[in-house]
Amino acid sequence: MELSNKKAYYEYFFESTYVAGIVLAGTEIKSLRLGKASFNDSYCIFDRGELYIKSLHISEYAYGTYLNHEPLQERKLLLTKKELKKWENKSKEKGYSIIPLKIFINEKGFAKVQIGLGKGKKNYDKRETIKQRENDRDVKRDYGL
Image (tube, rainbow, N blue to C red):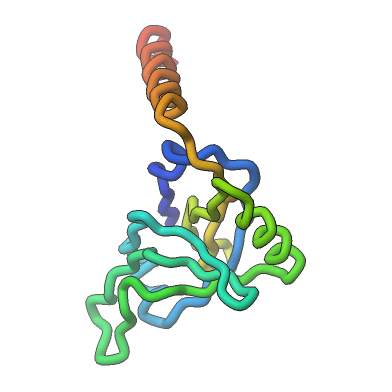
């Protein structure tokens, strides 16, 4: 099971990526395994030296009880202190954001999030991305790749 944030690649240039663990409740991981998550405008912020993901929507588990989770709550990301300091310093620079790119379940059964350090694209960069994607599609169609 893998969910990816396609809109992020359209909106940002990514300098580096990192795979981080995520702290989830029991009903959140069950819902995530069913593929019930959405990246709409999600981003990462630092709070007291720790990295949190905001606006990541994980739907409520259908068979959950009164212990069901809140769909839009903040979720803590698990990184080493060295990585946290490095990314915190980079994210303070103008124009940089930390954006979640993928959520997946690894071979051990743990939920992981791939995050990227991105710099926002300008409108002309976005048009260039669309043009490149259309050219690739035309080449694949013409040559049957």
